[in-house]
Length: 118
Image (cartoon, rainbow, N blue to C red; front, side, top):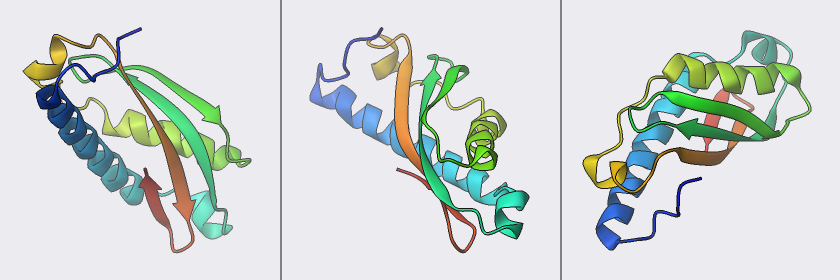
């Protein structure tokens, strides 16, 4: 496991910027690939998912931590990560501090076919 990224204010800024860019990419891909079965059947919900990234931006692991209760949404969230990968490599300021970056987010599939990950 990597240590927390709280070693310096500068690296914290780079981490926040990296995570914000990651979230924007996930939301863009998620909204472009909203699951048609969910859209057609008005299936909505939220799930908690962990995505582990390597320093080069490739995905090391994807794990649903708490399912939405709808397999179509849980599978769609995993597929969104796979479609969006690989991600940008870590900035140099993070590479020396972290081996694997675990990102845990709540993924929301909402009415109006909107998707967010916050």
